[in-house]
Length: 250
Image 1 (cartoon, helix red, strand yellow):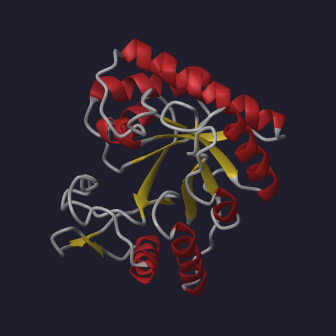
Image 2: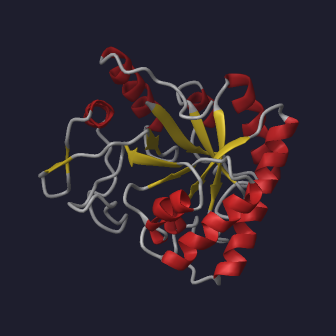
């Protein structure tokens, strides 16, 4: 099972999360590309450290929304969205190459991630951006989303993921962060959920009913309180269950 985390989400003098510690635990790093968070210096630092740690680098692309941390939907024209996603991938890939590695995959962030579960035009725009940049780049997304379906139709490898610390609706989508209980905090319970996800067992949806997902990667949010403790518990739980923890990309 791959473990991915959102990293590099500070900006200027402001830090968010313990990127250094998480890079010692996860296998893939979703690096903010300067639109919802991050800046050139942070992007370069994370790429340098990920390369040394042997962690795969993913472009975490989002809406141009620093003030809202990319968590607000923006009704941007598809053509412009394609250009903005291309810009973000290319910027991060430049820093990755300087560090002796490369961008290995693409994962949308926040509101864009959720929008392209059903928003066909925006999903197609992001697919177009990835295809134009490098058709060999895998893309991470929610199982059953328009995004992964269109990516597959375009010849991209779609990688279904699950979220360690987020509540799920009965339909398998994420409970809105505006709802109570949408973000989980009990490290032991989260680790048990991830072991279930990795071994094909069901987890409980927000109503307490069984929900079975089949992810190739599990995401933990670097900005969640006690993220490092949660990450340690997850990795220890997976290894104790005999699950090999490794990146989904070569």
